[in-house]
Amino acid sequence: MNELRDLYQEMILEHSRSPRNRRVIDEDAGDVHHADGHNPLCGDEVTVYVRLEGGTVADVSFEGSGCAISTASASILTETLRGKSREEAEEVFRRFHGLVTGTSEASEEMGKLLVFGGVSEFPARVKCATLAWHTFRAAIEEQPADGPVTTE
Image 1 (spheres, one colour):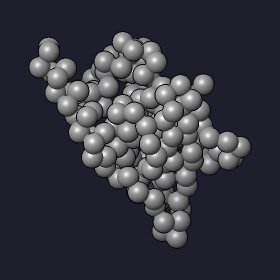
Image 2 (cartoon, rainbow, N blue to C red):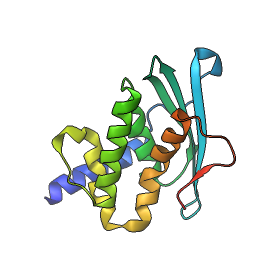
Image 3 (cartoon, one colour):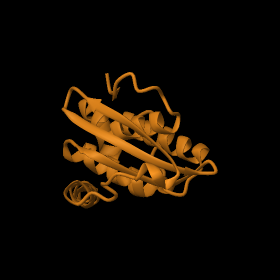
């Protein structure tokens, strides 16, 4: 079990050091949406960009700064949700949220998201892990920009 936990920790650190899809999606690229998120507890800030094609996440990226868990979560989100329908993305969000809050069981089909299973043991870190996910939802739902999505 310790070897698996070490592997998960290393994956989080790798995605934090070398995040995938950290970039802006050009607004001229089509149906592009974005939202800003902020975690006042940790100071994490993220902007998530989503390009939709016919209800499918054709591209997703992020920019921002934050702790290792926040950055790794945003990075893995971009890899996980690309190619998913809006409905599939919502289901992945629901499962991920259950995993990090400890309200649902982990399953092999969650793939890389399983690395965040231990976050439920540290309630303050749940907000770090879920910030990009809540911000993604705000982007695809085109929530009004009356301020950033927060974890409070």
